[in-house]
Image 1 (cartoon, rainbow, N blue to C red):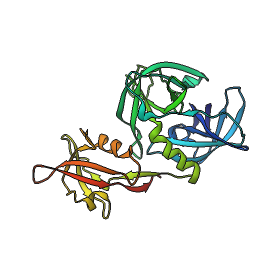
Image 2 (image 1 turned 90 degrees about the vertical axis):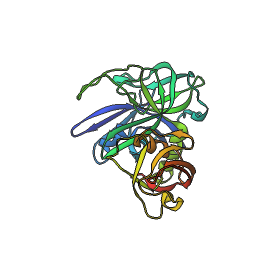
Image 3 (image 1 turned 60 degrees about the vertical axis):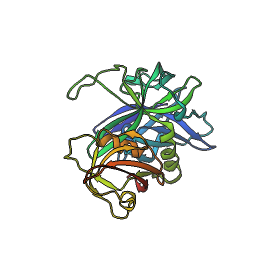
Image 4 (image 1 turned 90 degrees about the horizontal axis):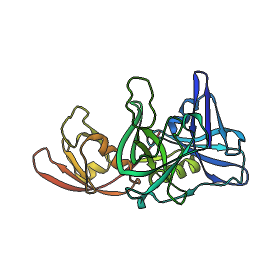
Amino acid sequence: VSIQVTTASGGGTGSGSIYKSNATSSYIVTNNHVVADAATSGTITVELLNGDQYKATIVGRDPSYDLAVLKINVGNLPVISIGDSAQVSVGDPVLAIGSPLGLANTVTQGIVSSLNRPVTTGSTDSQSYVDAIQTDAAINPGNSGGALVDSLGRMIGVNSAIATLSSGTSQSGSIGLGFSIPISEAKRVIDELIADGKSYRPVLGVFFDTTYTGGGAKIGKLSPGEGAEKAGIPVGSIIRSIDGMKIPDTDTAIVRIRSYVPGSVVTVVVELPTGGTKTFKVTLGSAPSM
């Protein structure tokens, strides 16, 4: 579907997919940044493939994952098939579906270029951390929130961001670097938003030292009673890997943690403040995303 957002200060366009439909209503998945400006005021209009338009309401938003769910009061609509992004491999063919630059019902083709790419988007007060699928399928402004599908038409990701060569406030088009939220990560959040209107994120129970410029992610403070403290990780430790994946910086550490489900047990290897390394098993806690 195409999504048009209108607010007092302007508006914008985006894309989405019909995720669930019953006899009276349908739920649409998109990006939080597509609809965030209309969260308190403004209107959201969803346009279907046949040109029919419906007013939409926001069921729930999760800025941490850049996901949102909309609802329209029309039922029995066809829904997108859901794939398994955990089974995706680099080189797999993919299609990006959406409304780039307002051109509805556009499909572009490419491959999966990389997996588990740490990507951050948004502003400092509303930042999203994405454990992204990277693709060279052309993604442009307006594609946000649309589906990335595999060769069988199953959604494996929600298109969220692009890399550009532009500077300042200008926008450039696709340079073959698009990023999609893996559906295996997104599905839990989407289902929580539909069920409760809110979602939860996993927490390690640390505050990172933002002044640290070395390799890894340095722990500046522990959250009392949370997983890291219970596991015995000392303040000042530098996280080097999580479940065997190297952690080169703080953003990567946050993205890696966000890729898990609350309650997961992860293996964290740290460089101790006193020297040497030590491995800890940490049970991730849970916190509301908004």
